[in-house]
Structure formats: structure tokens, C-alpha cells
Image (cartoon, rainbow, N blue to C red):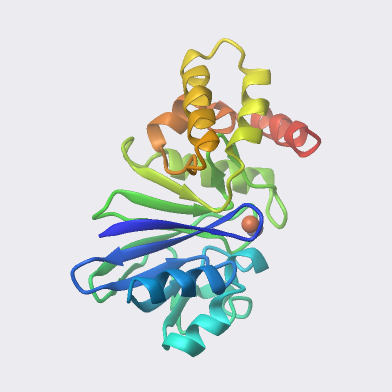
Length: 239
Ligand code: ZN
Ligand code: FE
């Protein structure tokens, strides 16, 4: 299996999980269809599945066209079945989904939206976190409560430290400005910022991150209690 990062819209990432033996793929959060089509046509890949983390347009807008073109199956959270366009397979919290050679466990992580989920490709040690956990940040709380977002992040913290994190947006540099402002003496964060800038300057995504790096550097994951977390989330909204 290999992961291909596809840049979409302004700062979104869609991801292809590619079974290189069969040239089958699933796509996570196709913001738009065009860049996905370009890549899979060029590489003669069959798009078998479309997985959505949540219903926002910049994560599902490619569903329709991709499904029509490739007859792919759309997968999402059961409770969001009325908001995920063209959904075929509805999954429940903690359900394990298997399709072709792909295997993933779904976790309900509300806060950004009420039906937000993440996909854990446990055989590959990869977590697709959508707009809940970003590298050095977390999503805005649109539909949920601070408590929900905080506990969703606690769940993400419990994954193995070497888990790779693939999130929905390239917000890392802006997020790092916020983290360093309130966590000045964090040397791990300073080092991460150097490597982020290095990558971005060369046109390379800052993604993936790892749970370990986020535990050390992400101020929202470092928040010990809900009060600290809520205060930081409010400050970040106006940053
Ligand atoms: Zn969103
Ligand atoms: Fe988004």
C-alpha cells in the first residue's frame, strides 16, 4: 500500500490509498474530482472506494463525479448518511470496514461537526483525521461542544505514537505560529517548525505528521484540561 497526497482547492489535501499490487485505490475526502481523475488516469488506477470524514463541501464535493465515472462505492458515518452525497456504505462507530485489500476502523470524533469520523488504517499505522486534528492544530468547533472536541482529541492521543497523521488541510505553518506564541520554550516544536519550513519551501506538504510529534508539539493535544483547551480554542479562532 502506498499513500499519494493530492492537493485540492486552496489548501485541502485528498489522499489516495493505493494497493500497488492490483492498482486499486480508495480516496479519502475528495474535495474536487479533477485532480483525483488526473492522477488515477495517468497511473491507470481503479478507484474502488470513496471515504469521507465529514460532510463539508471541501471534503465531499468530488463524490458525485468520481462515483459516476468509476462506479466507486461511497463510505461514511451512519449518522451522517443524509449529509454525505451518494453514500453507499454506512459505518458505525468502531466498526471495521473491509473492501478489496483495504481495511480500516472508523471512530466517531465529534466537535468540528456532529458526525465527524476518522479512519484508522491499522495495518499501515495511518490515521486520516479530516478537520478534527491538524498538524499543530485542531478544527474549529462548528457543531459540537468544547467537551466533545476535547474528548475526540483524547481518543486520537491514545493511538500508537508512531501512527502517521494525514489531515484535511495544509494549515501547519499558520498553526505553528500559534503554538510557538503560547509555548515559547518548546524545543521539539522549534525543531518541527524548521522542518516544516524546509518542506514547504521546497513545495513538499508538511503532512504526514505522527502522533508522537503532535503530542510533543501540538498545544491543543498538550492541554491538560478542558478549561485550558477551551481558552486556547477561543484564542485561535481570533488569531
Ligand atoms: Zn470541515
Ligand atoms: Fe475542511
